Image (cartoon, rainbow, N blue to C red; front, side, top):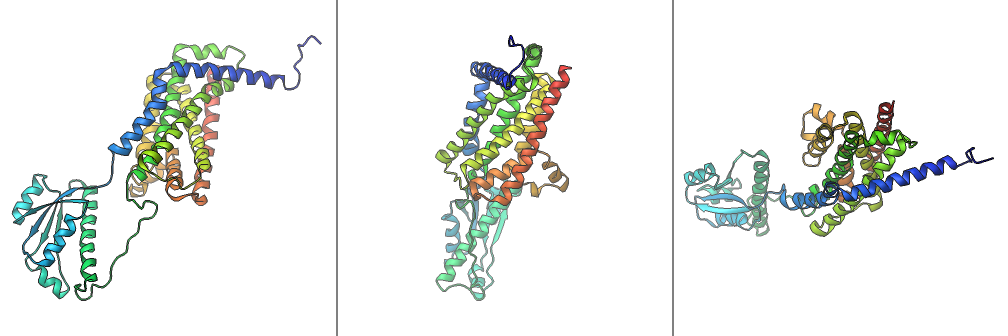
Length: 383
């Protein structure tokens, strides 16, 4: 009768009060910490500018030495196809030996050799040119070679339109790029940047902050209070969850305003799947910090387990299908693989449910498992 007996719902309301107090306390601590603000706000902007402007997988202005062994109209027309292309920076030379010296000294990355009988063979229908590419950078070499083939194809198409095409060459190739009509690598890189931002905020920042609490002993001080371990974890992660959403907003707005990357899918679905990945990252950060209890070890483990796989094995920069089979299997362990697939689909293709649903389901399962592990590890440490 004196109020010692709990009324229905009283325990729940008390839990909410404790959680609100912890969230408020953690939010003020977050705002007072310049490093957290730098990682949560400054880092996304810096990464967006770096990857959007500084890192470009497109190959342009490739210096190519052009050796014309005859001065026919056909040879000049083919050379002009390279001169008018934005992908090449032509450098006319007189002899093949001079072109080879330029290739060896890296003054040229490729050689286009138009032989002395080019016009005669074109008239016979079997014209040939020689393209030599510096293969020290295999990726650039393959792209440069494909650009050279495209330039020759453009010239051949023009010859066919003028009725000057050789016999048997009436078939032309019509190419079309789906999902990236601009053929701009920023369309591919910028959406994947959200993975790095979410990983930094969700996993790395959370792991460092929680490990710092363990090192200073403030976490143990909270554990001796009536506050439950789940309430502590919830109160400490909500501010970083909101910070992660702020980083997501910065990336989406920056991708649209700075680089013109389209968002063909639903913004709501993008937000939901990003929240799922953020929960996965938070769970990883909490679990790592609960196990290590050291900022240094937590940072090293987090980078090894989350950031590097998100960069190298998720499909953000390299296609996993080109990797060895064993590595391909390993990529499915890391949540970044599924999130990158979702981002690239939503940004460039649209709401493709056959891709969205299975990948989102995997992220949801990972989030539940990792958050449960973090709670269990914290309870284990209490005992």
